[in-house]
Image 1 (tube, rainbow over the protein chains, first blue to last red):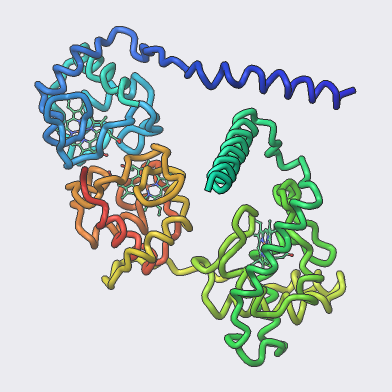
Image 2: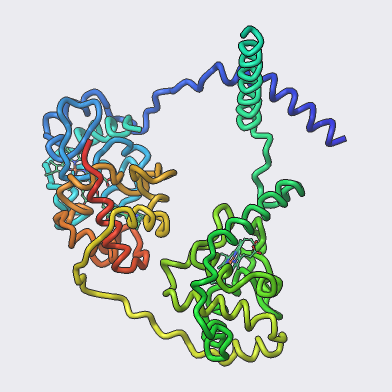
Length: 127
Length: 283
């Protein structure tokens, strides 16, 4: 009984396989940060010079090696090694790294909240 | 001529069909990877046989130290066994811990192993572990002497102990001496190739992207690609070889509250890993 069921299911699976293989999963653009504009964020990253210290894909000349590279930062579990990677914590770290990590080599750059949200929105496109 | 061409074509087609079939099998998810689904007898036999042969070929009998059967050596081996092995392999009257009972393959009761295997073979398995099983490699946690002593116990002690004797010996074990953690970094020479192997032994790959390490794809912490060119370690220490060793041995001291745990690296392992990281230049 279950044996037949299993065989049937396997056959069905094989039939569906060719379809599944063809139709690659399409990537939806996810908005992880409500209220943040990732395009503005990218410009701000150039303006604030994050690239002097970080590798940031997709921005002009961001190849700095002072701090960690930011490619894949959307998937990173922790920000600055201590904060769980949530949008709120990302905004907090971008605005006040010295508060999160006193003595860190990442300086407070005086970024206002709304701009930090835009920057964070761009960082969350880096998967 | 025509014939060889046709033969070659036939072989190629068969190969393609086989590869395609294997691909479909994998992708379909039909293979049950659960630890509750036992291996079929041929698979089990093949793996068991391969493991026995691999150990027999690699264990060097001539390295067996003299006097392994001495009571004093076996007694020290017992203490090591009871602290490090009984939770998985059990002992006379001692069940493995719950977590070990759920493993596939389930850790063997070691009395038959002590009877059939040589001390050198047991030592080799203890030292190097067994891939795709939960058997750990102990060479980064135990000294060479300790590994021989625990092998001596499995070979010359375990099989002769009754439940009552084992229990009594366990009850009389002194509390383990607190391991002295090295504090300062003395300095020494690291070996990048040894570091690459050591990285697999301290779970670094579960948290970092590390070029040259298979499966190191997760970003719990920053990627270590380009670590050699990065100015700071964890944002606080200047990236010098000495500081890297310090960081690897005690991240919690350098950066209290960091999600990177103290992993108990021995100094030589830290030196070796630092040497490997120093080869990872920026992109």
